Length: 619
Image 1 (tube, helix red, strand yellow):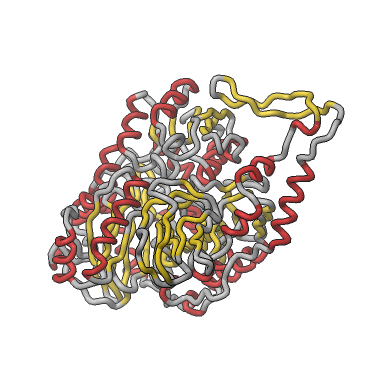
Image 2 (cartoon, rainbow, N blue to C red; image 1 turned 135 degrees about the horizontal axis):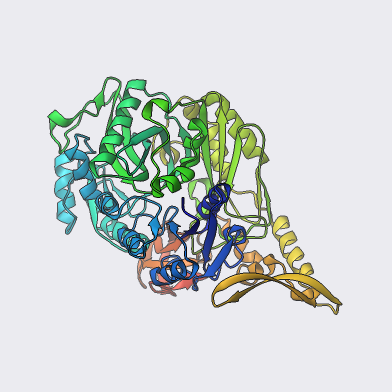
């Protein structure tokens, strides 16, 4: 068994891995950026080391810095979590080259499944058919138009080296091809460091069903039930549940067996997830594997291989709740060379689990605007069958530079209706103050008859769910109170010395030391938050408005301008996009609220902007 593990990640998943390691008696090493100096995962770890920098590229994606810390700490294993380096074959190779265990699949499997095109080919070789598409990279818009003419619209342009809905654009007609290619490549490059893209048919109303697999180094591979992840916005999941409901046991078993075939076909080891699209009572479509390999089609519906994620999924707790299997523990044991302690026949599914991702976003009546800032208050629910996996506590700050997941609420019930009711009860108890969150939208989804009756699909939230009036409840009074509290706590006074526990760094390693200092020297965490995020900025970040009738086009949040759409002298109408703003790994069109002529563009691509900044003037 590994004695010390370094967690090459942050936030909720780093906390999750640290807790599992502590339960197993394994020492933990955390790494952190400048902005995460006092983050929860840093506070919980046995040791913590600075990576430097603020952005992910400067810190958590700094390979040399992480490798150096691994050697300095004598870590025996590295857990990559999800995101960042979790599906990076070169990082896995660099870890193993040091004689250190990478807690994940082998680099060869990551490479095969990390490239969505080779992943399709690998699935087809073992008889698992994918969504009709092409294995050729897109190099010219005419390729897309030709595919659309042959297979019909809509179609999806997707990042070849990505996942999680990043670098994906849906094309409704031939006129949208160029812009979709540009946007998909730009987002893929920003998020994954590569901009290769491919295309496939876009199914109109599928359900997103995935299968959790676990494989050891001794040739054993099992699947641990299914999850339904159909409640999405921007191709990113909001709510997941396990098992997938309303699908025949025969189809679910066929999905599970197909997932194991895919995993074994690439010699997969450790935890992974095979994703499918499912359509009820849908006739078989053309598939590149040929009709004789369309074994995915069953009575009652058809499913198509989508991709394999070679890492631990965000939604893994839902599977843990219905199987009783600690997936992080099993990841570590498998990486240590132990065989799986169970067979497929031992896996029993009990009850139903629902996981809700609580993101720092204002639902904004369907706009879902990122809302970075300090967390003023955090009260998490409890009770029977209720679990909270979080990466923050009250006083911590959600940064614009990282993913906006605050935490995950997971509720178990003896059946699906019980799980839904328990989740709604728990959401009513959950309080997150100081930032906008998706809680209001989560309640709207879970309480809707379509969700209860399994009539939803991957486009249901955006196309059908009415979110009119659904937005974050951040009153001006609560923001005023936050600023007042910060101001009162940081007031300078002449006071006697008091004992304080201070965090310091020595050669990049974080230590806690005891010091006697003037009381005002120890400023609360929220003080630093105030210096970077004013009350006016936070209030602006909660608004769905992205322009003013005066003609000033303003941005609603901190972020980076990734594209300037309009030019000086252009004639624009209400709702026309002016710039594209990237914030918290999401792209947002900033539009004008006044028709007229673009008199001035105040930003260029790559500029950093703050909430309320004017980016253009319309006359």
